[in-house]
Image (cartoon, rainbow, N blue to C red; front, side, top):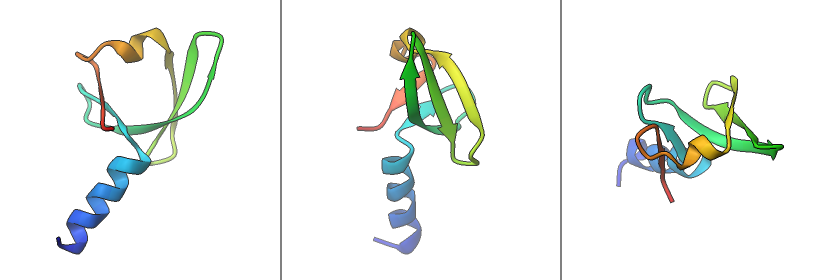
Amino acid sequence: MSTLDKLAEQIKRLYPLEDALQGIRYRIVDQLGGTTELEAISGEPRYVSTQSLQDQRFWRLEA
C-alpha cells in the first residue's frame, strides 16, 4: 500500500461522514437538541439536523 493510499485511509477514519452532493468529508463534533455540529477537513464548522444525517441520498458514512 502506497503512502498516498495510507493517507486516504486515515482521512476516511478521522472524517467518516461524506456529503454525497459536495464530496466534502466531515467528522461529528457534537450533538445537541436535534442539531449536529460537523467539522470539515478544512476545520470549517457546519450545523445540520441530526435526523437529516440518516438520509443516504445526502450523506455517506464510512464505517
